[in-house]
Length: 305
Image (cartoon, rainbow, N blue to C red; front, side, top):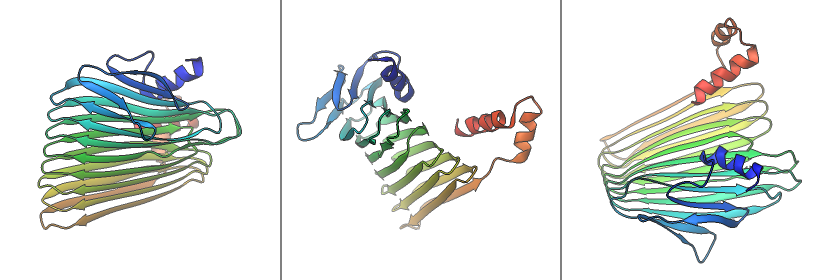
């Protein structure tokens, strides 16, 4: 890998070198490297681009990395990755996509990830998106995540898109069985004329299932954000969805949370707040010697932390 590719790999997967354990690294549609482990098997799909990941029941304290890098201007791809997580697992999965576009053509990555989380399994899933480049071509990413969680299973999703993505349509669908839980934490920042749409749909089908969906975002310049979140309570369950956004300059943000109860024992809450940076926060930091711009950056970093 050259210096650009190594920098993107660090940005999307926090990797400085080939990771320990299982991994699959993809660049411009080609395989850079793949390794299965004793408990995690990676199998390439035969009918389309992508892989099947099989994690054996009882696997604990293991991780796998599946970053994707694009450095060809005008390159477009759609990749399908399916994760089959066995019962009683406790694993970390790190994904992400980085695009470096220095040409005239648009570069686009669409990743469709489907998770089948087994009974009483625990999964932490981290996904970061990052773009850069000095060309006129756009960086486009459209991630789709589909989650099926069996009885007693738990999944924590941490998604982040902080820089360099011109347009994104982020979709997440989840269905939870009895006693299953889902936690989603989204961090998003747009600037320039960027556009970002987020769409969460969570079905709490099982008794005592739960979901907590939280999005924090910052919209700068002339960028636009749209946030949809719909939690459906179909049994005795607990659901919470929250969108907090900071709006700056001439940006626009729409927050559209929705909750639907189809059971008298469903307990559902939605919250949304959009506002500018408070003047007293800026003044307090500026009295410590920061410029207004530096104070804004400190506040934003703390908000998205």
